[in-house]
Amino acid sequence: MSALDHAKQYWYPVSMLDSIPVFPDVKTTRVLGMDISITRQADNNVTVMQGDEQWQVQEIYDHLWTSPSEAPKPIFDVPEANEKDRRFVPCGVVRVRCSPLRAVENFLDIAHFPFVHTDILGSEPHTEVEPYSVDIDADKDEVIATKVKFFQPQAAKSASDGIITDYVYRVPSPMNAILYKTCPTRDDVQDVIAIFVQPIDEETCDVWPWMALYDDDSTMADMIEFQQLIFLQDRSILENQVPTKLPLDPKMEIPTRADLTSIAYRRWLKRRGALYGALLNTSDNSVAAE
Amino acid sequence: MASVAVALSKDLSNGRVMRAIVSDQDLVIWRSKSGILSAWENRCPHRGMRLSHGFVRGEALACMYHGWHYDKSATCRYIPAHPELEPPETIRAQEFQSIEKDGLIWVNVNDKITPPAMPEGLVPLRSMGFRCPTETLKDVMSDKVNDAEYFNFTISKHDDNHWVLKLNISDIKLDIFFQELPNNTCKIHALIDKDCPAKTKKQISRMMESWRRSAESHYEVTAK
Image (cartoon, rainbow over all chains, first blue to last red; front, top):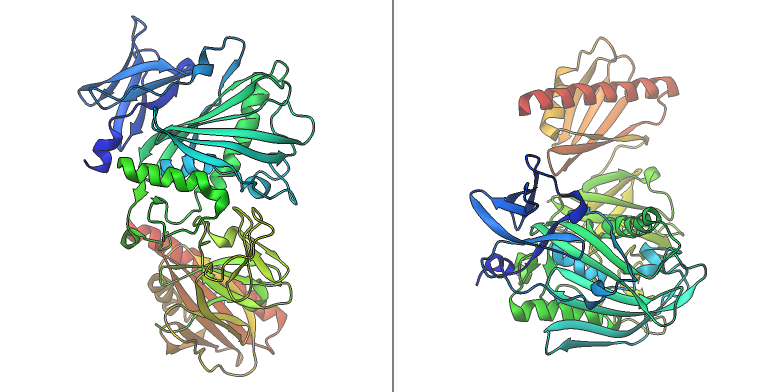
């Protein structure tokens, strides 16, 4: 199966639900290099067209999802989306000139917090990454990282002081990742933050961050602004990684123990043939200047 | 492939980092706090981040992404995620040959560095970037040897990438080094006689800017 055919089996986010244009207005965008147009019809159903072909749609996690496949794999489950006392925050979209897989990998990385999200998600000298666990959940075939801990000066909009934040990460499909982290205001629950990645093509993506939080005080605008700031900081990294695609050959980039999640993610992608946006061999490693 | 001038020494002060490109090779050029110059592949071996976005910490270059430190031998010496770990010697950035001579920084990405022998008595004037290939710029310069607005000059070509312009009004010489860049862009690095009066230097600088206007608009028109 080609990298593209493999990628066609999944659902992809293409809009927030509250910003789908109503017919005759349409939104045009791209998925896996294919142009699509999106509109909400008079009967309230949303249609996604790629040329003359109509794609399946579903409305879930505050986003519109679509798939080029006639029989896509079921979308991953986020049980917390049913917890009615959470606040659900779709954060808009960030266009990034990088492989969708690079965007997911960066989301799984904590060691960059002190350097990229300085004085927010991390700060020197608190740079050490303690050992943590990574597994493949056999039932769901997901990458799961647990017991991740990191010192954070301002873990969330609602955090007033530095705290040791606990994280759990899930990668339920190649271009989506979810984290569960210490809620700064409550001990008994965890905040949920996800990135849903729309692959424009192999070297461009639209990242749709989404949060499901226990935060009764911050305004929606404040929470979105906080998350947008984090993602714009990440973009300055993602658009400067060479090569643009994610290398799966372990000889091409050197990891350490702090990169266990990234190592597991790369192996998991390779094993399942999720190669859209990936580089398999060193010979593909074009590091020429742009 | 010959050695290529990539910058004026004075434009890279101690503790600073810059990006340069030579024959499609992306480079980070940086100077340690004590002034040691290095030119490496512009890529951190850990996760591919361009090192030109990094920052100098004393005698090391730190990657912007995860703060890994590389010393002057391009060897990784410190990984902040594991402060106690002594990194294996095999974690290294790829080094290229570089040298400073006569106020210029030279790099050779293929070979041992051999900066050309230069005339005595030159000082750096300025570097300038152009949104056109060197060929267009060279054509414009050749057309402007009798530029009434600035100076008349004669061109002697030391080699393809090194032209010497002799201004007719006085005996002032201007040495121009061309640097071809990707996407139809280029740079020049200019050195001038050390005795050139400040006023003339300023006029020469204006003249270079007029080359840029002409070359870029000429290229924009012909490229369409």
